[in-house]
Image (cartoon, rainbow, N blue to C red; front, side):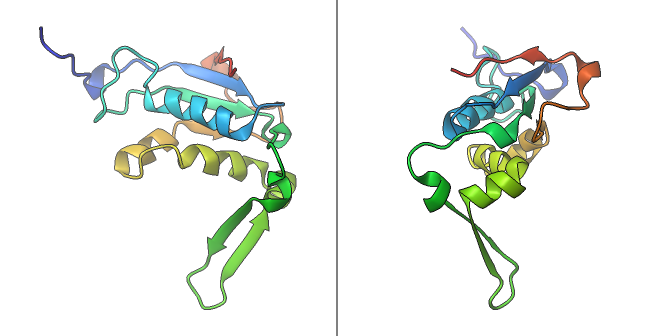
Length: 143
């Protein structure tokens, strides 16, 4: 019996939409990262981007457990001395909800060129409005 190897020319992609309202950030991110990688398909091949497109809506209504709203910190550095910027999760969810969800998902993808291609198939929106109606996305349930 031969192993099946997916070719990038033969990948069939679907569009999924995920409602992040009242979803825990980490559980949402793992499910979305799995779909972006293509691990939910029987034709999964590690060295090929065989994942699907994912649209995440209502990113500003995602929830964090415990005391993470105050304790969880997000860091950026400009590269210059004194250029460290720190923000807690409360600030992120109020001002930058899309970035908060994107960072959680991106951290669960491979950290290489293949992961960058997978990340480009992710679309995150703070509210329920999105511009991908023409793709007819299917609803993806996150338990």
